[in-house]
Image 1 (cartoon, one colour):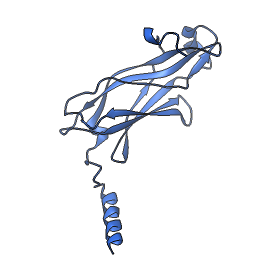
Image 2 (cartoon, one colour):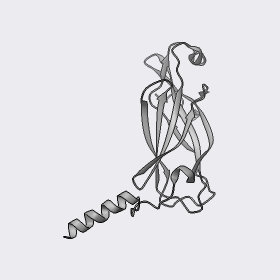
Image 3 (cartoon, one colour):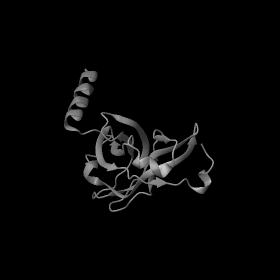
Length: 169
């Protein structure tokens, strides 16, 4: 009898969206993607070819009246015109400490691993006939709910490696 009752309560909670994990907060409205910077990270020379990978840096601002906490992000990179994503990466968006109303996160940087390799000059990659840009699709997950929060085109510009990254492969 207890199992049936628990199963019924779980089904009602699922149908109404009222779960102990979720706050009922609409993440799609609560989280605003700001301070966006996109481009292609110079990943150096790989197998004798120049490699560039899509990169996006952004902040999340809490536009809700309540704090937002424990949000995981998925950043999916899609090649323009492709039917599916090239890769998706999971990153922490907001920790358990939460983000107060009106506050923003520190910058979140997400760099793909799949990108373009080219034997010519890096700057010529964007004029190559085989070049197709990337789009980053951002999704937020909290309490089992996943919602889209943004879609951004990766700008055709090279982001140089930071001095401490020079020489890494």
